[in-house]
Amino acid sequence: MKIGILSQDIRLYSTKRLFETAKKRGHDAQVVSYLRCYMSIAKGKPRIYQAGNELSFDSVIPRIAASWTFYGAAVVRQFELMGSLSANSSASINRSRDKLRALQLIGNTGVDMPVTGYVHFSRDVEAVLRTVGEPPFVIKLLEGTQGRGVVLTETMDAAISVIETMKKIDANILVQEFISEASGQDIRAIVVGDKVVASMKRTAKPGEFRSNVHLGGKAENYETTPQEEESAVRAAKVLGLHVAGVDLIQSERGPLVLEVNSSPGLEGIETASQIDVAGKIIEYLEEKIQTRDTSKPMDI
Ligand SMILES: Nc1ncnc2c1ncn2[C@@H]1O[C@H](COP(=O)(O)OP(=O)(O)O)[C@@H](O)[C@H]1O
Ligand SMILES: [Mg+2]
Image (cartoon, rainbow, N blue to C red; front, side, top):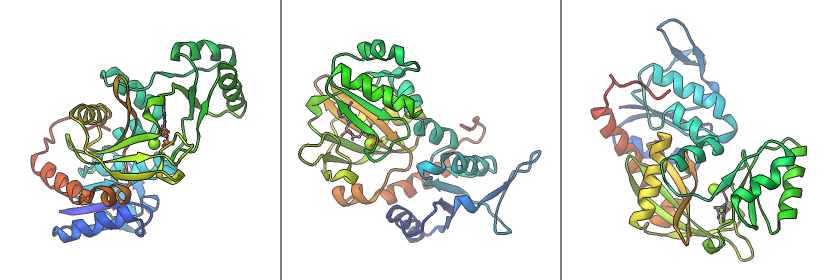
């Protein structure tokens, strides 16, 4: 099959692995800079070009950077309209990139997550914090990634003043109950299709509650419990993602979903788990292209 890997950088580990694995499995693979794709949108004739050449693929694997979600998702949507099978649909990418929308959908399926609040006016901040519970509170920038933009506030007053400060600079934030029993650990489960194919546990460096590897967290292989697997698969499914990195923390009331990533990095998980995750993704596409039902409405 002709596979387009939509990525801005061929040197990235994940891009390279997907490209090489697709080649090894006998596919005609190509890495495509999605920012260099331009689109022609006209009645019944969607087209994509790059430097004067028309592009077309049987399937595409989006690896859209968070900062280019709008343009990247438009490119994915255009490929879908042209009949390409996308590992993740454009709509599912948009749902997962909006952290608030994703949490609203995940909570609605009955998957547990930290109680979360969202508020517009400063005068309503204390009231929303009371709906979340008792301090400490976690405050998160909606656009944050890699643990940057996640802070812990120990008291009600500290939380209010941090939120007011963030609102002054027009930052979009949500507030969350702090799960202290997670003890600086979280679980990253890679969902492909309807199962977890690999998972790892990340542990924050001493004195830190955020387990992100970018902040010095350490990753090790981990086997998810059936309950964790069910939460991860349901969270990916409600967002419509076929390939997802689901972050969970363990709490006294069971696993809680924190967030769902539509372009999960492969280096950390393949190193920790020793599983060929790139191979699982390509295999999934091979199977899906045989069995897909093109009469169903697209998720765009
Ligand atoms: N409500 C919470 N309670 C306890 N720890 C949390 C909570 N939210 C986040 N964390 C920790 O902080 C890390 C980063 O938070 P996350 O929501 O995943 O933001 P980011 O998108 O920046 O990675 C998580 O991996 C987890 O270790
Ligand atoms: Mg995270």
